[in-house]
Image (tube, rainbow, N blue to C red; front, side, top):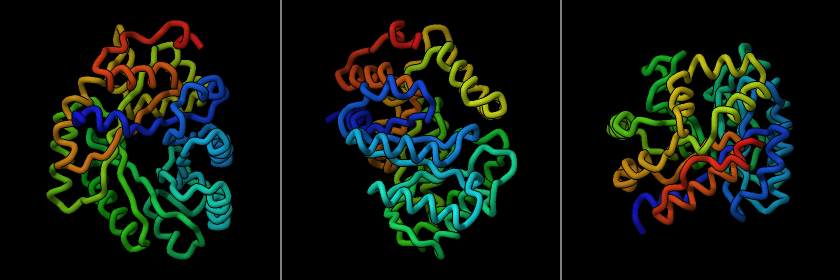
Amino acid sequence: MHPHTNLLTRARWELIPLRNLAEQLPFLPPASSVSVTASASKTLEDTLEVTSELCALGHRPVPHIAARMVASRSHLEELLGHVDSMGCHEIFLVGGDVTSPAGPFDGAVGLLEALRETAHSLTSIGVTSYPEGHALITDAVLHEALHVKQVLLAELGIEGHAATQMCFDSKAILNWLKSERDSGFALPLHLGIPGVVDAARLARIGARLGIGASLRYLRKNAGAVRRLLRPGGYDPTNLVHRIAPHAEQLDITGLHVFTFNAVADTVAWRNAAVAGRRSGAPRASISKR
């Protein structure tokens, strides 16, 4: 199996809990690994509701828990109890994109520390990473937080991985990861890439997430949005091919695919890429939904 094929077949599909998601769920491959986001315009309970629906469909969902959206320690216990009741034992932990924390947790590190004294049945936790930097957080702070998360996961006896932000620059990704590996970062990495999305869908999702969330995303990720809105759209195939030869050495174990709920087009792209074909531009019949 070619290295890029290995990565492509181990894709996790990121979904957003919006009403337009229901029409796209039938396009998920059977028993898919699925990441369910936590949106500042929704609640964590909305995320878990979609997680439950995906469980019922036979998929393997991983809900995002946004630390800044957790209102209290008892709220955290309720959320983890709900996760456990669905038979899920993995979460993806993010800081959260709300202006002010709803409770005692300002970020992912604080919530990980709270797990020392919180009942749960988690066996795996994913955390965020930023190879191309973050507009609002310095590289030094990002580096320190990533290593602290690794230490806390080890102390908790929980397996972990890091998933990257949506990435475009293979050189930046590889240089960042080589540097982190040299400095002792050992968690497996899932490479975050955009799926197939057109400008109209991106705009509609931005509107549904709310103008505040949309403006925060654009402010932090203006370069990413420009790439996605290029004429003809963005095809991540070349990025995967450039990264794949280094995957085994750098412990890149899969893809975290940001679908923007364009599941049909994104899965079609992945299947074509596995088969060695170009999927072409997004299909109008699906992209207009």
